Image (cartoon, rainbow, N blue to C red; front, side, top):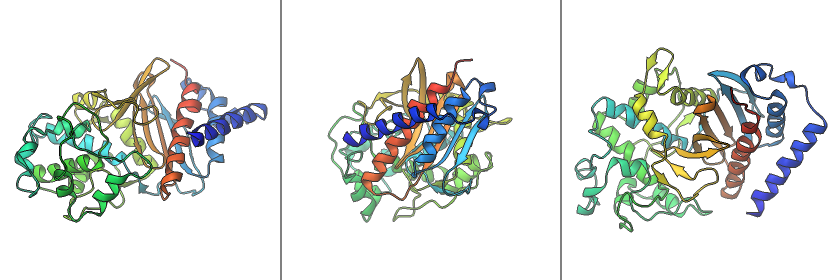
Length: 354
């Protein structure tokens, strides 16, 4: 907590200094046209420039990029690990699979799908559904958001990632309590691969990345050859922006409906409380965090160390941030907080209603 408030104080002090030494607001000449205070926005970007961890920041309103900057690297479309934003991509892919009839519905029981994939599958898994995986409410014990990320580390180093998850005992009935669980979201990748009869990456390339004209980087697999459904997908900031705008526009990209509108609505609304598991994330949809600030609902995808896609639909606003991803545990927590706080306390207040 001390680190969080220390950084908040630094942000506020820098903001005051920026006002006293105001920079030229014409740096973002399109901001005012789109009802964003250009002076405030420049102050926010000035703060981002002082943060050695933030590598990219993009603000788009009304589907128009009004401000973007790459910090420190100078290369706009370098792909990097987007960590748990991968989960939100899996949410999109699940919606596409449902539309194509590869999955029955979100309340489809996963037992019949996984019983032939893992010796750890037990009768208790009979009532576990796709919805439970999407809402992180599968009822299994898991510790990941604390300083040690104990279960993620054990899961990642296990001989069989699917068996590791399914061998855990149920501590709550599925659907009742939110517990952040990367192993559970990975099961969606496994299920998607078997339902589509192709790899998760091939499915994503065919139905998401190619329509959005995205060229992803590497994406790691587990020890059984399934693409990681929780992390490690590599994308650049413009790719994240396209995904953000796709979701903001109800699954439509240019003149093509890539994802069903009904799925976008479902995926981005709150289905379960997180009990404030992370700052600004009191609610959870289908692998998207949800909240409300200043009278506006928002939802976001986020990843380790400060990777973000945030949408505020009523403001037609999309914000993308990427940060240095190669960090230790403590540094990653601080960078995550610095980045989300910059977005929420500096950028959002600059946006005026139309």
